[in-house]
Amino acid sequence: MDSGGNRRSSGRSLKRKKFDDELVESGLAGKKKQAQDSAQASQLPSQGQPTGKSKTKSGAFWTWPPEDDYRLICNIQQVSDLIVVQRAVKFSKTYTLKEIKDRCYNLLYNQDVSRVAKAAMATLDEEERYIISKTVLFSPTEENLLRDIRPLEHEPSPPLEIFQELLQSKGQQFLASRTPLDLKMQWNRLRHHDLLSAEAPLGSNEESSLEKKSFRDLCESLQTPATGESPAVAQAILRELECMDAKQKRKIRALEYKLSAWRNITELGMEPGMEADGISFDDKTLAILNGPHIKYKMQSQEIVLGQNTRDNVVDVDLSLNQAGRKVSRRHCVIRLKHDRQFYLTNYGRRPVYINGQPVTNSSRCRLFTNSIIEVCSAKMLFVVNVDLLHEIRLEQ
Image (cartoon, rainbow, N blue to C red; front, side, top):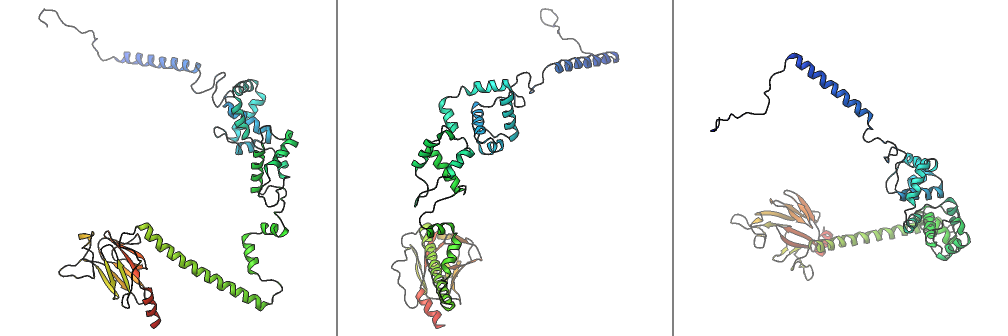
């Protein structure tokens, strides 16, 4: 109670449990209400289904864009083939063949659909109609007229004046929007796909025969000797051709090797002091390591690159430059094998990069002249004394 003596009360009714008969009555009332709702819903149109003049895709009144209707009508008038239209014409969206057939049927035989489509196409301006007409397919009659045009001598395609004369003489058989440039482009497409009826020779009979031959036929004709020569002369010519071919291939391989070496030098980045120009070899130097802070002449068949300590002495100490303490004590070894080829073996924890390719621990990689060796950010150019190795091979 409050101080005034008034009694506070609540407007909510007290809830109590229902008896069995009350439960049965409430259940029957609920079922009756559900039946009435379902009956009312069956009388109303279902959602998503066309009613009357609905504009859904399933109904006949589904309206296409006026641009697609105009494009469809123009192309059917040209080729009279729905399959070609469905495959070759680019509409605003992808239509199936059945959808195109249904649309054509409705435009032809459904007056309501035809009236709505005409009213929508009437809203298109002249510029939109002209853009659509430029993409209309060529009719068989137009292509037959283009097939009869032959190119002039020493020209890949006829000049534009020939197509202009064709339009002036037989313009009634072409679409009104066709231009000489359109005809020339279509003629080039027909020629590209070998659909022209006949082509004029580009000059003499020899040039036309060469044009029809493939590259393999031309190579075989060049390698085949003349018919009036004897077999011995023919064999000599073939041997000479084989020798020349082998010599050219050796030159190409040498140039490719030099190109790859120079590409490695330019792409990986040469630092100052790594240039191979000005390096001079003596009679005892097998190779030279040339870098910004390292210049070492390899005069033994094996050298060790790493870090000098009290218990370990290496030939090339890399801890004096920017590599610092990252270099292992015995990081890598360069050896000259019995086949007179240089190989680098990595014994360190960090990889060694040869021309940008990593050489991991316990791996080996062959070294060539002008190879770039990178050990823990220390770059060196490995230059081989080719003349000395050649003399060693001759002595053996």
